[in-house]
Length: 423
Image (cartoon, rainbow, N blue to C red):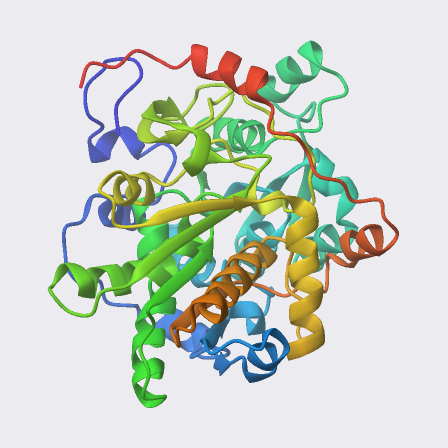
């Protein structure tokens, strides 16, 4: 990361106004393993290990020789993989004596997870939720408030960043970049408050790697190993969580895999973005990170997969992509909902709209196996359930969901404003 003021690499002290000490330490850590504190383990044990299922009925429906496995993270209390990092982040801040946490959320999975985590450790929680998702997903807001958090539609009039954004566009649908700006502003101005991020950063990817670590052991129990590992990509923690442990084994000279990151065609960071230094937020409060980006001022269309509406990709995922250790693909919204419905009918689980992107890619690979007569093993991360996203499915069944055309002109304008960094 680069300090936007000095142009020099960020050092741990630079992040002190925003993040807890232990999280900063983990962000810069080069340790191979980081021990999970016992108090965190006690809470994680409520739902971990999460189940790994063989999707036999989906295989039958597709008439494919492929073997399909999915890791189901929807069994967590907040309904998604986000709780893995939320519990750890809340714990470390509590141990430091922090009283209040601010954060952003897209579709609400991260906001729900952090709200639940803060309730476990007696912390106040304020969540800035992207405005279009705030309107689309009222039950996510209700879940956050049930856990005791305050949920605010972003951009809002509660921060200088929000007021400036509203002044330039009163009808703004919001973006994760905007919500991050508001949450960061509050944390930076209050000594008893810290900011938590639900994706993108190194320490979040580390926390999520429990998913892939469990998968390795579970696949051994199933006497199988994946040829292909798939995860949807918004900020990158979901994909990193399942794929990085397998990529790590591959880098150690062990089993080779194809790792595929799946993103929405309306916000195609990895498939259409530029690998460059950029801000993580719209108002340019954050450090500069080298990542695949569509430009920090780009506002994605208001499609239903709110958790994937981020302009940038985790630096470590971006680095993995740049090294050629993973692939990226994208799907339109209608194709992902079609895949989600097919999966629900076969396996009995309604996926979150974000997770349907991984389902769509899995089905595509399974049908390729059928066409080529190959019996490959596919593993994907079913990162959350869609119980709080049923309005999206209602809209899909009623024919109200539409595909968004990739906004090339808007992204070109956003990329034109990329900061200049000497590498």
